[in-house]
Length: 68
Image (cartoon, rainbow, N blue to C red; front, side, top):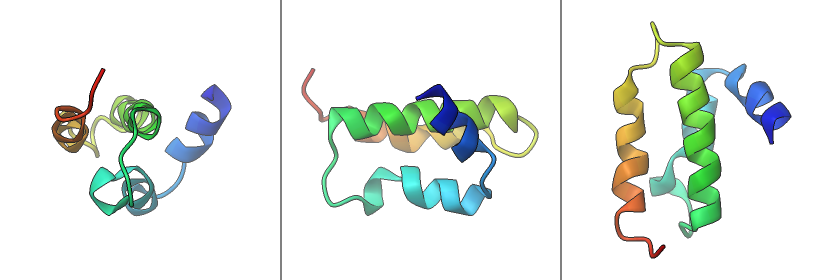
């Protein structure tokens, strides 16, 4: 998973956003959400001047109704 996160973090922000945005998925699962959180957190850490921490808000909102 670490390699794929490193590869994704190097993509343009717009591409990462489309891949990791729960509102565009057909279904939201714990596994998909976990992977998206890892990718977005990596992006926030790597591009802290470009991507604000608020980029995680969508992940938090999507996680609230999920069980477990």
